[in-house]
Amino acid sequence: MPTKTKSPLKYRIRGIFYYVTVALGAIVIAPIYGFFFCKAFKDAKKLNRIAGHFFKPIFHCFGIHLTVKGSENIPKNGGFVILANHQSFLDINVIFAGIYASAFLAKSDLWRIPLFGRALDLNGSIPIYKAGSRKNGEVGFRMKQNMNKGFTYTIFPEGRRSVTGELLPFKDGAFHLAKDYHFTILPITIINAGKVLPKTETALIPGNVEIIVHKPITPKDYETISKEELKENVRKTILSALEAGKAKEA
Image (cartoon, rainbow, N blue to C red):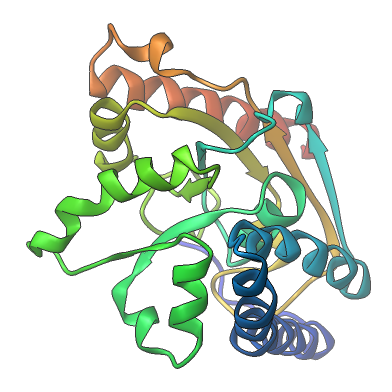
């Protein structure tokens, strides 16, 4: 079990300010930018791209040092799905800043937030409803349509954040979608985000976060293997860099 020792007060205060800053960006700046700029120029992808520029100076102010290795593996024109390990709220932010401005599959409850729900629509995100809802059957089709327009998605196949930093078992959903809708997968490994912005408390501890970008996996690469084999291959790829990162720290 993880220890419950609290971080020093200065880090907890820093964490609160970080969450407030991101919330203001998501709930105030993003909807305004989306309505008055993206809609006017009829390019919703601009809403995603601005997020990357938004986070870079914020990281600098809060002492978060982001490095990306393997950036040459990032497909240039969008239209792919990022699969990543998940330790922290920070994971989403570093993907925006370091990899690609991404849309998400998110809980449908978020669409109830005034203006923010509309911003999610504009950036290509797709709501996920409670298990059993027929609306979830449209997810893959809508993703494929948006990827054909250049949108990129991020999925965390663990399904939740890991408290300990250990890689959790992968759920099947992303791999069902891949086999059915034939999209390119970009595996990435995020290292140290859980230590900088832990799941277990509201604290931000300045430090380094590293992203390892693995080689993309095209539909042709996985057309002859099963969903289970694909899932295991992606998990091993992400895990290999996670374990290498821990070995460097030891």
